[in-house]
Length: 118
Image 1 (tube, helix red, strand yellow):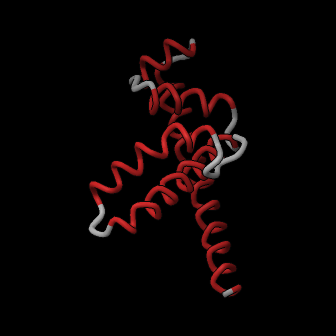
Image 2 (cartoon, helix red, strand yellow):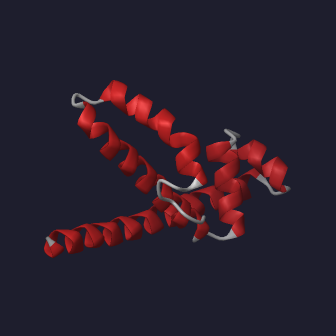
């Protein structure tokens, strides 16, 4: 996952496009950089949470969520039954949701620490 700040490749590749989009959506242009930062923070937390899943869970989530396959189609790609794919997908989503909640709580703790430091 590497660096996630303004010097990272992902930031350089997508930052301007996200900033342009944010500028069109916010009432005050000064808020746009905050929207970009929050977007990258959410994406980084999701990537970290995905990394916490097992290969089987990541695989089925990527096929269904990223590639847009139906669970039955993902089952054929994975060489498993449709029932197994739906079951795996349910467990993977539940686990990912739990990991994201953990990261959200950890992130809230980091924000509180920053407030206390001021």
